Length: 59
Image (cartoon, rainbow, N blue to C red; front, top):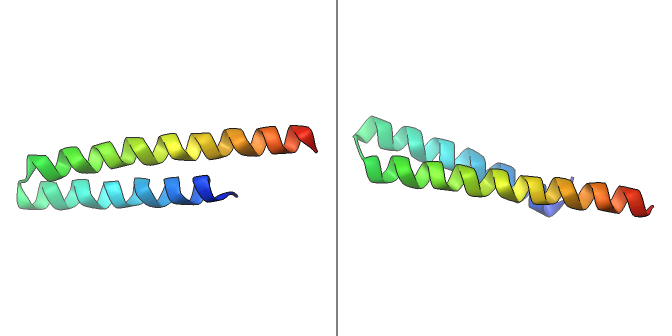
């Protein structure tokens, strides 16, 4: 597991927490920010996955 995969997973988790907090408080802005962080985190995880595939292919 590389740093992009870890950071992406953490950002995704943080986004889920932020989205739920927004739901609890009725803040659509926090919900939207949470969803955006989830998307960003998942994208970063995919970049990390691709780096791992490339690294494995070169070895």
